[in-house]
Each structure stands twice: as C-alpha cells, then as structure tokens.
Image (cartoon, rainbow, N blue to C red; front, top):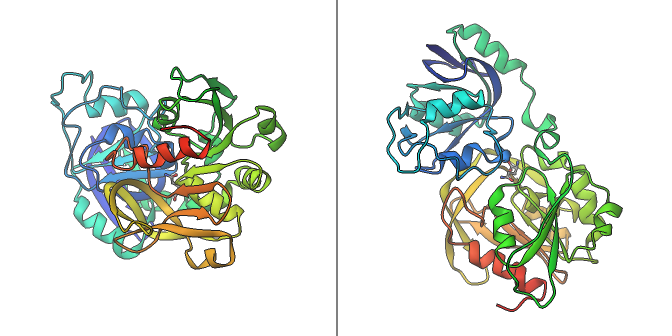
Length: 365
Ligand SMILES: NC(=O)CC[C@H](N)C(=O)O
C-alpha cells in the first residue's frame, strides 16, 4: 500500500504503508534506540508525536506484549526504514506490522530515515503528517501545516488515569509501610515496578487531583512521572509541587524534573530536536562519574534560570551540557531528566536513583 509523509517545510517522502490505514499528524521526532521499540512506542511521553527510528531494522525480535509501558501504543504514527515481517524470538506472538494494525496506528516503511534525521537535526523537530493508503503529498503537507505546535496542545489529559488506584507492595523493606502518591502525567509502568519492588506502596492519581485530595492519602512523599508535551501545560502538577514543597519530599523523573523546576521558579525551553535513545551520557557533577542513560524528551530546564532558585544542577548531559538533574539546597526535593526506570534502555541508574528514594523516606538499604 502507498504511504506518504509530509513535513511543514514542504518535504515529502513516499514509502510503503504499514499498520493501520489512515492519516495522522504530530511532531516528527527520532530515537536512536537499537532495541526497545515495544517499550518506546507504549511510553505515553510520545503522545502527539510521530516516532522515527534511526536504526534501520525494527521489529526483528517481534512483539511479546510483556514490555508494554502502558496499555497501548501511544505514538501517533511510526516511520521506519524496514519493518521486519518474520521476527524470531521465543516470546514473540506477532510481528511489528500486526502490532500496528491491532493498535490502529499508521506507519510508513522504506523511508530514507538518515535524510530525515539530518533534516530534523538541522531544522529542528517539525510538524508532520503521515497518510497510509494514499500518495497525496499535497494533502500530507497541508495536514502537517494545520497541526498545532506541540506546546499548544493539552496532551496530559489524554494519558493520565481517569480514577485514582492503589497498589500495595508485596515487599516489606520498612518497619511500617511507606506510601507514595504518584501524580500520573502519563506514567511508564516500570516507574511503579521500581517503587513497588522497594517496599513502597503507591497511590496513582490523575494529573489534576487537588492538593487536599492528595493530602488525604497521607503520603510519605510525592512522585511526579514522565509525560507528553510542554511542561508548562502541567498546571495542576506545578501547583501540587508548590503546595507540598517544605511539607513532604518531592521526587520526579523527566516531565517531573521539568515540573519541579518550573514550580520552584526556574524556566524550561524547547530543545531543537530533543534527546531520544538509550545511550545518552549523563555526568554527575558531584562524583564526576558518567552514566549511560535512556532518554526521551524534547524540553529541558534552563540551567541559568536555576540561579535565582533554591535548586541547583546535579547532573548534566555530556553531549550538550544541558541540565539532567536538579536538587533543592535544603529540602528533600530532587529529580532527573533521563529515565532511571529504563525500559527501554540500560539499567545503569536504576539502583542509584530508586535506592536514593528509599533513603530519602527513611529506609535502610
Ligand atoms: N519523557 C518525558 O517525560 C518527556 C517530558 C516532556 N514531554 C519533554 O518532551 O521534554
């Protein structure tokens, strides 16, 4: 089947359609992951985006469903060089194309992803439209240009849970049980697994839960998850941080890092094309150690704007020196921009980050 991808600058790429028929539009972003496509595509932080894989063969170990980070594929569309149709893995139950079809996600294959990646790096991430089942390039470019900018869209309401839910940890690490209220801005499952495996019970609440409701759960700390779009859209979570700063520890990952920074007076900005992949080097400023991290973000905290706040930079990206972590000078408030929960990507920082959470709330390791 014919498929076409159009970008807002007029670029047109034709290819072979994969997945479901239809038209989608969103911001075209690229990830450099070699593996972990199942985890990446089900990460709700990708809502509003068309995800392009720079690695030329995607789907070669099939799809097991075991690695989903949420219930469904969250990316609006998919761009690949080659989608493997005969995967091999003992856990695989379907191939990549079937996954996209089952989930109603259009994709395009046979694309020169190198050219599109270079263009994205030079121009910055662009609005794009993908039509599977047509080669109408004018229509694709028009749709791309009609698409709102990602900063102008409320994506959180599309991915946050509808109702609060509670999960009790099966592990007993603390003398008495410890409890996190996790503000769900589009959480990845592995964040919950990392907390639960350390004896921490979780109550996951929708993004706009009032601070009095959160208080009523009597949490030991507040946790802010990853999530899609511009952190300035996360008004409810920003006011929750303001409310609880000084009362409870506040810990965050990725979107959470940006929200904590905004709430405490810093600024965020849009990166030209973002950091997405499983081998982003992060340098810890205290120890000088460099960790290889999993990342997926298009916005960043403005390091200079932290000067006027009580937060300071704890870690930076070794590629471009952008802020990768912040901590409060005297309160238990800290966060990282990368994904210590991994899935996809390396586990190098999982223990480091989540063991620190345990210590923060008085646990013994
Ligand atoms: N993974 C995330 O939490 C991403 C945060 C934010 N949406 C960004 O793009 O920067």
